[in-house]
Image (cartoon, rainbow, N blue to C red; front, side, top):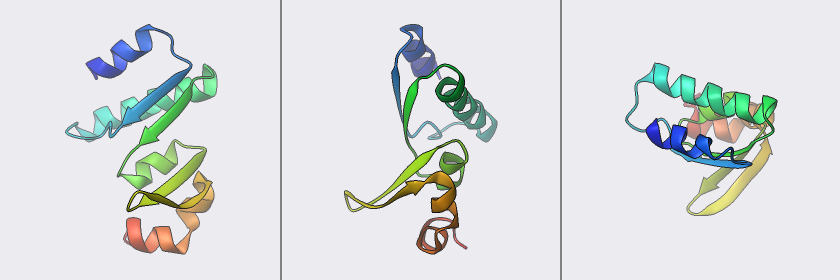
Length: 94
């Protein structure tokens, strides 16, 4: 969380978050993702979010890219990816 706060001090135009959920309590993760979402929507900051929790990532994203073995295998809107059968089966356990 300190790293995110430190990154925001400089008023960036681009914020890259790599696995912000790693090792944090779920409510803290939700707060960080809410801040990222707010920055993108209200402040015009571009946010690149790298996250394995695809449910949370898609909930705050406009677009998503699914990477398997170092290659982009799917890209679409967050809404379309959350409805995609491959994504549901492979990443959401549905």
